[in-house]
Image (cartoon, rainbow, N blue to C red):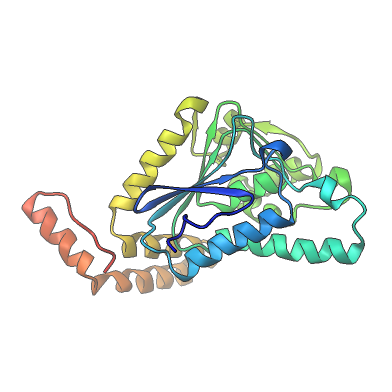
Length: 267
């Protein structure tokens, strides 16, 4: 079964074309909130992609409906949970977030509405974010006695800096798409009606590039950003060297000389 064809209870998947997959959080009656079933679905989908991308070259992650990207953890499900049950569930949540972060295929978040708590962390787990003008973000965890635990303290800090991240997290301060763009958290802010098309246009541009090159460039940026500059340069060259022996490198050079669009196969 091709990736995207499998049915999920809390996600809807659509192959935009053979190389681009649209994934929607789809619990509209619950503001697309993250529950145990959604965590299992996200983990299953991205684990499958991480093991075998099945021709995928870019993924767009968004929310079903017009109001919510993902409203964070489902507190109704969590109400009355024992400490042990809460921790067990959160371990599953962690693996779902990490599966997106570790995805070798680029993932674009198209935030179409509210992205609160875990929803904000899902967006931050992606490679970059496009947001609708109406999108709102918040990490409210300290107001219910916990802290962001889906990578938010780390991904947010790397996106906006420590001082801004402290203000957002410690004061549980909401912010809008325009502020997010000003701070460098969001790449583009668009009218909601144009959001998905814009994300898909960028996904298509990524999918048209050499797949091995895209993956290796993503690896170099992500891993290189976690270490000192000299080690980062070593990571970059190691990633570069992975592209030299590919058929796509030869095709790219040949197409440039022949002044035509290259046809990349991922080989």
